[in-house]
Amino acid sequence: MKAVRLHGVEDLRFEDIPPPGALAPGQVRIAVKAAGVCGSDLHNFKTGQWISRAPATPGHEICGEVVEVARGVAAFHPGDLVVADSRIWCGECPDCLEGHYNLCAGLGFVGEVCEGGFAEQVVLPETQLLRMIPGTPPEVAALTEPLAVALHALSRLALGPGEPVFILGCGAIGGLAAFAASRLHDGPVLVADRNAARAALVAAVTGARVASLDAAGRHGVRLRHAVEATGSAAALAVLTGLVSPGARIALVGLFHEKLSLDANLLVEREISLVGCHAFADELPRAAALAAEHAEALARLVTPGVALADLPVTYASLLTGEGQGLKTLVRP
Image (cartoon, rainbow, N blue to C red):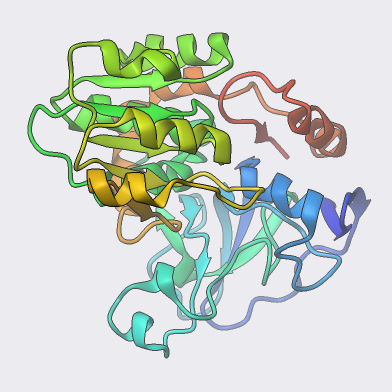
């Protein structure tokens, strides 16, 4: 079958490989319909930070159709549209035993510790799958996993009724956070991005208000809740000086540099920086939102690229040439 495999740092290849073999108990064979390119995929390609074996097939934002189930699998049937839970946890560490699987001491991800979705087929345990509502377009269903990440970031902010939220960065997670906030929260949503076209797209889809980073606090509202989705240390430094006293900032962007912050500013103004890793129990809610608002969410994705074009697409995304918020691979 056709697949794209990561052989090492900046070494991504389109290849013919054998399809997955016979199913083991509890496994499900899936024909991949759409798979999203995540910022973590690009980060791993550039740095090799999470290369635990090579070559490996990346891709953890997976939507596909069930084509075969192992004997004993009763929850899924051929023809079901499913999405993958990207997290692979140990089930034995203290956090797993408490149900905090995203904080597992040995947490890995589909496409890293097992083969991922940048291929025509993928085999996953039934425990890693969630059935989508019938009729959900695959290109929208593929947003379920990053939408769950966005929902988790918002949940970490503990927004109160009517309170404004400022989202810095209109990439996939920031844009989806704005989308979720606009649907689930009754307060104003402000967004900022150095890419004006991308910010305008998010605003058009979500109803959010576009604000420049240095002027976001001049809209007559107190900014006590913010999502940092850029991974830029410089942007975060500006943001900490912009928010109101007592603010909480949810950090969901991947940072490529060490932070240099004025800790006294955090102390004196009681600003909380809150880490957000993957998602907790938000995947089912994300799936329901994707199905309910499929038409709006479809405006945030690219038409889709072929597997053969993915190595070139990686290069364009790394130089900021990508269109839309989410690039999808359509095997």
